[in-house]
Image (cartoon, rainbow, N blue to C red):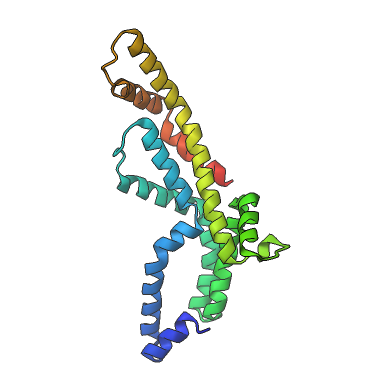
Length: 220
């Protein structure tokens, strides 16, 4: 099977600069998918969305802010992996020490180690069973099995953290709803009254710091 560089070389000749530009553009095109599939971005973004919904504010913070925060938190969490990829794969590839095939293999090694550390054994066993493969060592799991198992585990992690986030806010909603009912103010929406109290509680306990700390802790 031809590699990306072989295909590009066939189409554009031996012009190294042209080949590098086409490869770079291809990588940039696939970058969003790589970010979703191979990093902790999915878990972080889902948890942040749970926080916003638990507070009862559908558009605050806006999506752009949540995505930006999730992106930089992903870089923070993945920094050791990115550093290894840069030192062990990218630098030798740019210097011409290794070929593209070896570059991809070296780049995937720390990434796979990260995914294997984060994936649930039940999810990995489930996808291995679906694939029909017999794998004795998890390090030999093919990417076609490891990546969906990793994504499933990331969603599980996010939903578990989201459930814990919802509990204190649900308690506030219940207290406000019970109080309004006791006062006979049934026509007044409880969410309108509970929202300021939830925001106040979130600010007083430094909620964003707690949430971000909890997210990062789950990766450890």
